[in-house]
Image (cartoon, rainbow, N blue to C red; front, side, top):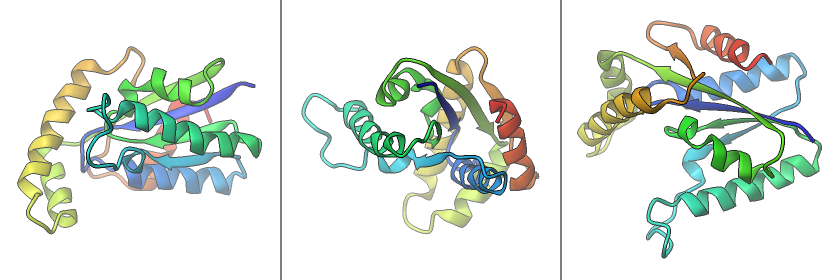
Length: 173
């Protein structure tokens, strides 16, 4: 079976989860079958498993387990959100069973001021400065290493509905 994978990546505070949920809303409104996985929950284990310090293997196993349930129900489209998802298309495609998986990589971006503002609203604990620093580092890292063909979508001062439509156009869904 042919599967379609839409990867939403970007640093913290660019709107990955929010846009992913809105993409799902738009697809439901069109009665387009799909499923959504919030990747942040696929590797929440401490300590990291032996031999898997970056938690990549456990992430792949968890995606494979969840996807197998979706696929058994006839699903063929997956929206997956995670900071580095655009760099992990091969791993996520393997977790979907390999074979014919058409992946679209969308890198969501935002200016530093926007990221700082959004994270200040979200992070209420002691980790705000660390989240901002990590987000800005990841934004540069992802911009430098984005795969060829990755679509960059700036999220500053835009409605989530417009962003979702841009993402859906990128995926040709």
